[in-house]
Image (tube, rainbow, N blue to C red; front, side):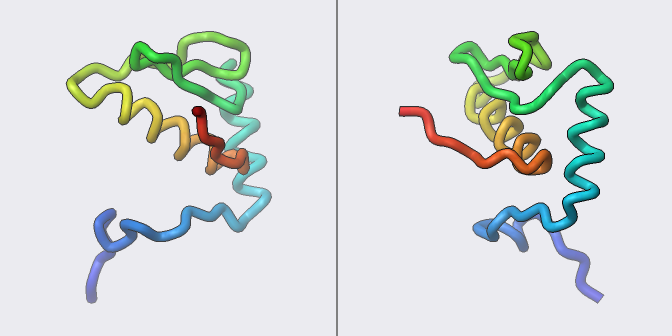
Length: 85
């Protein structure tokens, strides 16, 4: 039996189909004082909806990884990804 890997899903649409799971995820982050939606600043930091630092992402690709974390977490919380110009 084949076990899926992240590369098996590359390019797939990311969907959260279970509203209950999504609301539990949002509630869990709220209980940790890290409300959604999250965003990034331009110095590799993930910031919550209250404007507080969630984490710093180090390394040469830190900004890109921070942005990917934000998209993944916000999507799991049923927030639509937006594009910054």
